Image 1 (cartoon, rainbow, N blue to C red):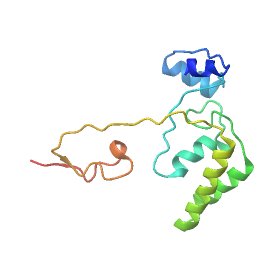
Image 2: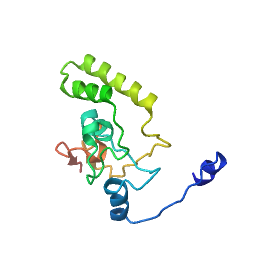
Image 3: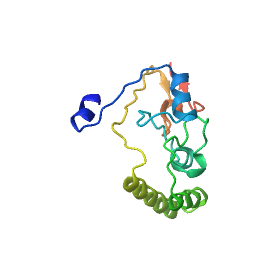
Image 4: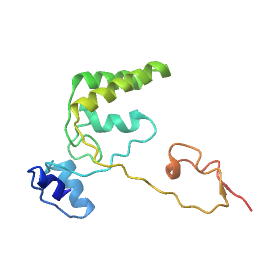
Length: 145
């Protein structure tokens, strides 16, 4: 990344630090111009998208919220509307509109997507039936002899 950014005239200072130091710098002091972070969005936008882009999630000192300090009143209204909409089709339309705003405003630029592998014994059955994968409930899991 340093080389690629240098090719377009942007010089990067790379910082390597332990997690507590990084958390304080990013979420407490906002001491960064660019940050590489993995946004774990979870299976519902209210649990993930809202905390990264809602103005009410600019909470200095709180980890894994809106550290970019992006604020857009139109987006905030849509986030609020989407979180309360019981009709799936209307809710989908609202979140598509949210996606369009975020794609145009680009408060965060996703440079890559991480791929997570789940390794388990083939005797384990019924454990990975949800969008949460290994982070989901194991209530249906059992070991097959």
